[in-house]
Length: 472
Image (cartoon, rainbow, N blue to C red; front, side):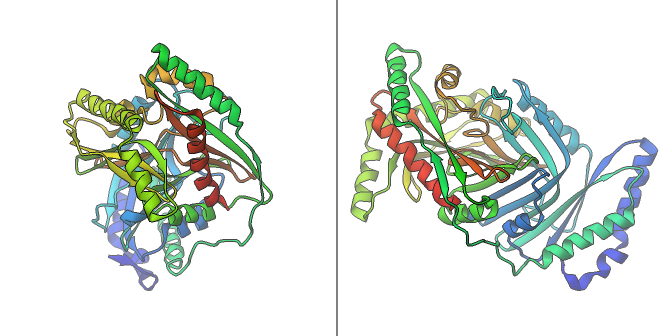
């Protein structure tokens, strides 16, 4: 059933939904408890990024997610319940928070599509605690949104989540729901509003010599056997002459990087972490898991011939293949430790607009007793973003890097009520502060035996340019 403006009487006189809320309110009064009514309805096909632009408030939690190549997009607005935590138990505590709230959700849904379930949105930082006191995001955030618009192909679902307790005003709740549906349906012909201003950026450039010295030092550590690989990142701080347009940047990202996952998560205080990640940490659909081993990089060529030459060099580079194999071995061992049986495909190329990577898809079947966050906690951080061994590499990363990684290179994604999920690694990313017109762009490179400091610095610059292009 699609709810269109011509069916206003649907909510005014819909006895089924009204009686559902009356019954659940009576249950909450009798048992002195609170439940969450999750109401799902098919609506007119709208662009979730347009909904996100119209409804997302800077002082509320929100989340945007889009896979352009899969024709999937989600806008999550405000939170009906949320959870923040730090420390070594953050994945376990987040899992408990989701489980607790799943027991409170009462589903009322006229839509029956694969992408129509209530979703919990999650963001985890690279480290389980922040060293910088003023870093704007918690090491772990999970929330269930008040409003969720999902689109798969041309099918669009509105999901509204309401707290049910003794104080619930049912008539007012239905009125708010109807007003929201009417408003969103009116957006079906709208496009993302793009101002024509061209921000002028003041760049605080990354110091080339400083980064290259770090690479040389890391190579010496590798020679001594301290670790066999480390990923060293850097951050480019830019200041804009005009306010940064979050929605314009997201629109640019989805057009420039259609084969990546475009994301944005907010902290409710004016900061957003955005990006276009080429790397899936895990995706689970109907108990089938897929993950990416993504490591080893090269620039794209300017001509078809040059592009093919660079691709061939990447595929046959002993150094790049070694770096890639470290990631494959790590992922397969971690999945095996959880009782999963990974199937590894042959390495291939993942070609993006200005860079290409060695890529190996890995799949496995997930037992029902294994929670998605158990897998996330085991896989993060992979050698692709940390090093080998990860524990030692992470200690050294904090010694080498002068900035807080925060959400950079960390898991972000969603989990539905049936255990389906998708998490990406927060690379090709930036921290935007619209209030101060500032932005921090992140990029990293894997250092292994044979790494050349100049080439690693050039790789970082290449990755930063792709992000900078999306902000203009």
